[in-house]
Image (cartoon, rainbow, N blue to C red; front, side, top):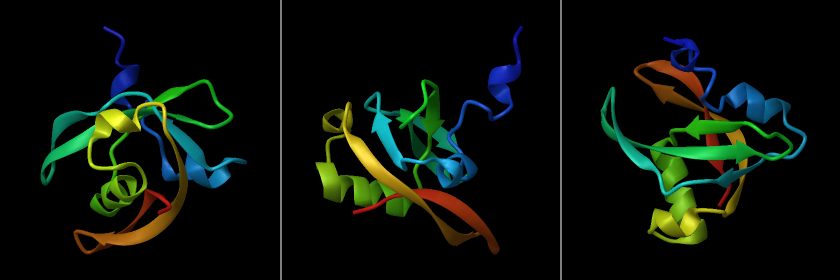
Length: 104
């Protein structure tokens, strides 16, 4: 069995966003609910501008709020939409992490 999909390489990273010339993602699906460390979370397939790679993106709660503000509450309407993104530091379990966040 090919185990490369379990290495995290298929997830969009803050580092990829930081290094991107154009900080824009396109949402490719309506998202799927997955079980996460803190309960249910939404996971999207996205494409970072300037790449051909399809990556998974699990947005932070503030990111979801910004996405709703930009394109409404129904994620099916987000399919094909572009979101300008950047990175932001936040505290998670008493440690500082860098998250990807769409700009409102």
